[in-house]
Amino acid sequence: MDTSLKYVPVFRSKQQEINVLKTFKFDNQVYPCLEIIKELDRVPRRSNSDKQVLLFGKKESKTFESCYSSLIKSINAKKVFIDLPTHLRQSRNMKSESLKFLRTVITKRKQRTAYLMKLKHLSDKVIPVISTYQQISGEVDSIYLQAEELKNYFPSLAYRIMIPTYEQDIQEVKKCVRESDYIFIDYENDDIDENDWEALEIKKAIEEINAHKIIHRYQIPDSITMTGLEHNERIESIDNSLPFIHKKLGGNSFSDYVGIKKDNITDGGVQSPGFIFYDAVQNSFFGYRYRYGGHKKGETKPNLSEFETTIVPAVLHSKSVSRMKIANQNYLDKKNWGWNTLNRIESGKENGKNAAKFKRISMEHYLHCIQQKLRAEEL
Image 1 (cartoon, rainbow, N blue to C red):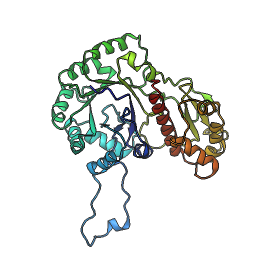
Image 2: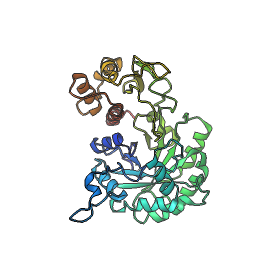
Image 3: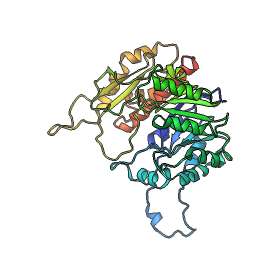
Image 4: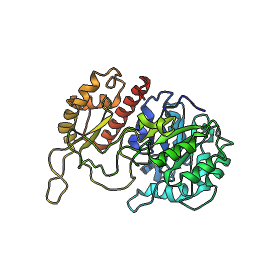
């Protein structure tokens, strides 16, 4: 059983999250997980040359395997979990490329396995994640059937167990799990109490399984919006206790969505200048938002320039930053690329009028702080 793994940050195949995956240096006790939510990481733009007949043959187009093989190779980590997440739910507002991938690949067990097999040449680094199809197709033994196909090509597999089906899932996993495998217990955004009867039942059920157990939960509720943040105030609804209690839940390591709100993969929505910033000393999150304008009828829309004029100065002069500057763990050193970006924006060396950029800053800062806590053996 793997004894080195301590933390699994989960990313989705979206541009800013992929950028972090490509540039962050993960310690050996951190294995990232990539949830692939579309066929290609980026939809290629059609240029005029693509529309013409090429003199030297047809231009080679991107494929699932070429796209994600290149990405996985670029990730500076010992291992990478790869998931085609079956817990995704279809919605009218889901982005078209993700909806198509969900309908044609993810919800079809054989097709999903075939796509994971496209990465078998990277089996020394890739750990495929398996989930039940019980709530999708009602198929019996879907976990076992996937494992039987994949275990011949991958030395390690991971099993993602969802709380609504945990009893059946755990029984199925016991039929095929190996000592080199991993088990995710996915609490989604449920409140976690190590003394809760269900948590105790799950802990008891996984105790006898000789594999590495990962407790997963995303700590930022769906109800949180940038518009709803109280400027420079602690966000009380965010519970980030998992890094400190995962062992009491039966886990060997913990997992989350890298300190950001889990993306719902939908089109549209209004961009508002807002930022959620992790305070590593207090293990809490603080919110920052625009000062002027609003989204009600007749109001002037908030200006993205407030990222630079309101949010960044407030963060840099916050009590959170003051606390982290004097901490022993070097939370705000030069290796924290999120912190570096905030300072470049403040000095005018970088454009800050970009909501996606602040998502990246949040992830890079949170990742750096968690790695520093792990190095200090706080977690």
